Image 1: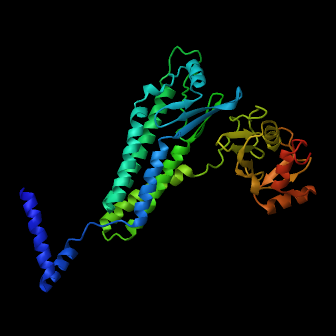
Image 2: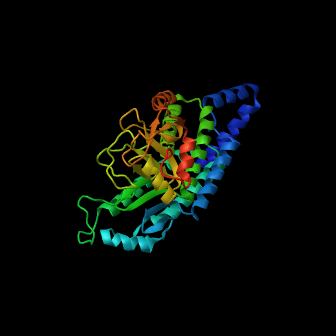
Image 3: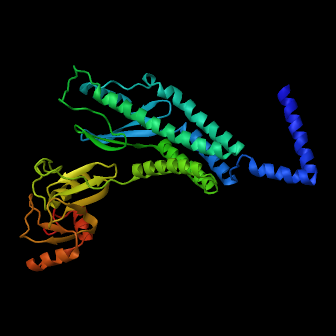
Length: 383
């Protein structure tokens, strides 16, 4: 009752102050000293609304998937992680996991699948309320809370993978001392004869888009902020989010070849010569290593992988991989690779031309090498 009376008195006072000339000036001064809560722009409200809608869509699509590739499963196996369940080739994967002592996967064993749909819905509602209220504080809170949720979710996912990959049945049929079977959090990892590839699915990428929309809205509103301490804090959070996002999306480069330790994925011989070794990375991020261009070509012809990048060792250096598509090649009978190849690669055209002139040979481009690799001709460009 007292609070209602106080509000009525304040309202009357503000009306009287504005009615008088001196009072209006006083009221204006008070507004400058105690400004109204800052509002966000219509665009930022719209971005919040779109973010909320995308989170609702996430409830009905897979968030993540883990692909398992092996020779005995040419089509591959897929584990789909939805907001409320595990789906995909669960029964087959559980059967395989039984042999190595991993626990079987069942949706009911994870409390996350019970609460995650409610958490996602709560965030969508939070974004809608923040858009309707239109306060900068609400927008910034939404962004920070969403980033924290993403970090906690990824940590929880990693712990789940760790527990399933390390807590193995000691009586399992297949036991490899010191071997763990934890899938990668994101990217590729070799697990015995299986290649595991973990990456966001539709829902996961929608989560990334939501983060980008919130980031864009925060940047827009932050631009007009007049408070330096708040600016610094918001900048730090935005920088951390951007660093995490772009590092997660960055493409992987070549994987160093351990001479006399790594085996060629085509001929199975140990890779020993640092002048000829080669490598390819598939679209799923799996890395294959080879003795020389001869083996790489044979592998491509037989398996037809979806390749993201090719790499080849620089002939002038010891075990230094360079981008195969920008390298320069020299083919000649006097060049003898470990497995019968007759092609050397160079990082720059001057070195390749000098080497070719000494052999009275020609410098070849990647297009020539690649076409020979894809054709039905022999395994070496020179041959």
